[in-house]
Length: 322
Image (cartoon, rainbow, N blue to C red; front, side, top):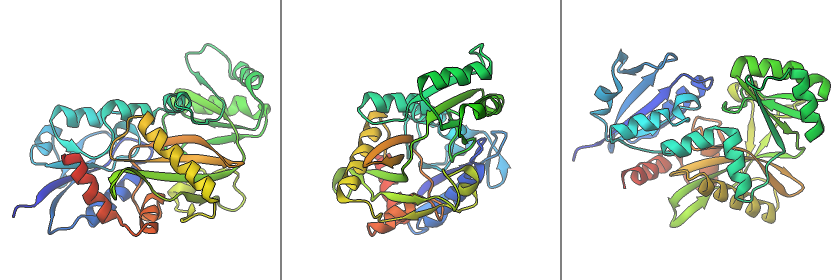
């Protein structure tokens, strides 16, 4: 019997390049060679596609693929660009469709959709380089809307890239200038004190339309008030799964993760990140392509329910092929 040919997209043009390589490697090693023939499809930092180390046009690479596993984190992998390429070539793929990918990748848009769906989100204000305001005026406007401390971050980056904590309004102008210079837009949110939590969901898993994995409690490195990009990249973030939250808190978190998955019209699986404050989950962001590399939260959630990355990927591939 011929094996299904699975292409794994990894690398990419975003700041999450290294994490994408790790997720792609985890996918490739998890696929059974008895069931699947794999293709390691590498996209370099300039956006060029490669197969077996040789540059090639996407159309040539995709012509020999049955289904795609998308391990691209951020950038073109999650903003709808790659999804539109795959749709154009009629290739089955795991993960969100183009419109949903773009919406979830944009934190401002995703939070607004979540808020309209009834979820709690931190108070937020957004500025761009086209606002025609000085960063000092932006800081004053922010202060008029809500008080410090503030979280300052780009609106489309993941893995905590570019996230900074402003303890007071005095810190805001310089942080805004840095964020605007690097990313073109700056998202300022109220800093909510609570526990960092991640919750994964899977469609059609274990006879449930939408199955919520157990919440992962993220432990901040010593001395950190929030989890920054360096901690994620260096593997310093620890996850407690199952968590020690109350039954009511766990149920609330799972319901919120399911709600945002549906509200954003995501496909196959997703992961929502929350701050749990006084028993209430505040959505920070959601990704339709969670990391599957060793140390990431999603594999640990799977293990907590007696599953695994190999079992999950087979399930996801089956979903993509239906």
